[in-house]
Image 1 (spheres, one colour):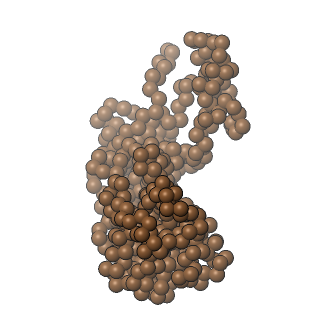
Image 2 (spheres, one colour):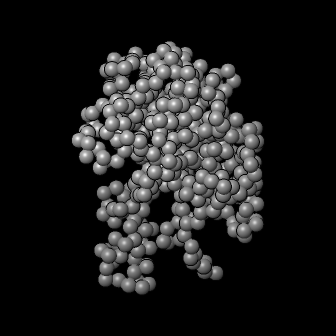
Image 3 (cartoon, one colour):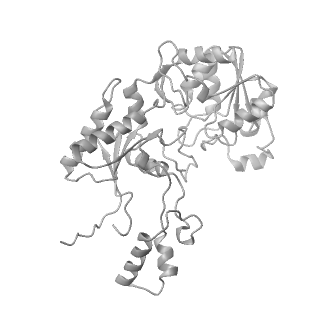
Length: 399
């Protein structure tokens, strides 16, 4: 019997789950939720489907939390408890404010150095147009708080309405530390104020540490060097420390999940046992995309996916159908065109690097692409779908 042609490609489904608490058997709950959804909605799992779990429920099941006092103790131990330079933080109540409270409680004075005109992920302090009008060169000029206010006044975030300069200044004072604020984009500028530094940048952190150490800094810690082990029974993250953390309460942060490769392998094994299908499984956090309106780059986590099964290693290896249709097979139509393109896909090389027919396809890691799809599917609000099932992602025109 001839197999019926599939008329649908990739499908992304948000899967509803129970509210997860510390100590829950997450592998069992995720597997059960996916299987119940399949039964309820009348679809079947297939080989190479991808089950994706948001990092927040993984960390919650692990009970991976740290308090302000835990962070303060670690900061004091690693940086001496006197004047600490805090450089290149992102502007976020959710992502950084509670971490800053802990840092401030672990120091007598904080010299806060903010990048400008925006932070690393695109939250804007001041517009480029205003910089141009003021004749300020952000690549070289160091501004004091007084100079910043003189030139630019108050600047509230477009979406949150928060003046983060005032907000961070007040937060540090409330924690009992002195505060001085400067604006600069060269890491070495902080060395005029202190040689004990916490660099809070995410994706440029290795370079920042290298520059500061070469310039003679006494102590340099990234956020990934804080809370790397338990402090008084707290949670921790051996690889990323405070990077990827989120506000849980006014006094605690939920850390990025600790090692969770065992979790994705467990879910893969459970699904295989229950259905006979070999699925892929990944944990995902922020997607990796940029908002065209606010110019905010979404990726505030250190990586999109901290754990995934081996079938998700690598990048896509795809041909551009419109290139084939407009060039190689421009004189063909209908079934003849379909057959020619299908043959090209079936016969494509294992690596298409440098091949014009792959130009314009996305050379990004599979986990970054699928994680971005899942982040957009699950959202960050009240959808209640912390698990996403992606089907047909590895299909092509020939399937």
